[in-house]
Image 1 (cartoon, rainbow, N blue to C red):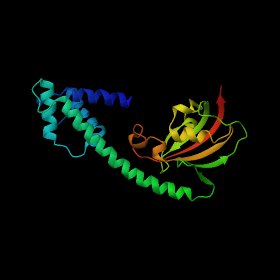
Image 2: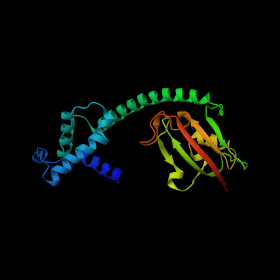
Image 3: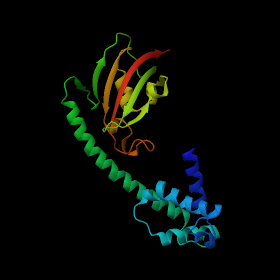
Length: 226
């Protein structure tokens, strides 16, 4: 619901659904229009504008007003989109570099722990429980329970929390999972530490997983589906 509301608010702002100057000057917020105007500003400021660092708010308002009025803008929409994309890529690259450095340290520390094995690709795993069932191949579909966390322990996904196992083809997941699940017998439970290049790399995944993140999963292999 929040995501839908935010998307609607962003679309309204960026397409120029601006309140009149009289409403904009209403600092008492006594009318619905004034509350909507101020509320949209709050939402965009919290969820959108903070992604772009320091901004010139005079130019921001100038661009919004010109777009709404259908006036000639200082740059084209294509130029605007290219500038935003370039800035986002710069921010993502910087964040990935920081996360990569933290990940390297985390991997080195985890590697030294007793019971941790490392594959040629750099995937780290620890056997929590060893089952005696069959092992899947890359062509198989499996059913698992899992909990995924960031390096600091923040949980970003869990089939256990959802109350039902997850099923997926091994060719349809991140490389660390494709490789790791093939090490397991049905009935096993492993802990995987997955470097970013075997996870989501510099692109990250949504809001929960940033660029360059090393991920930790506890996975129980329940079934190989025919």
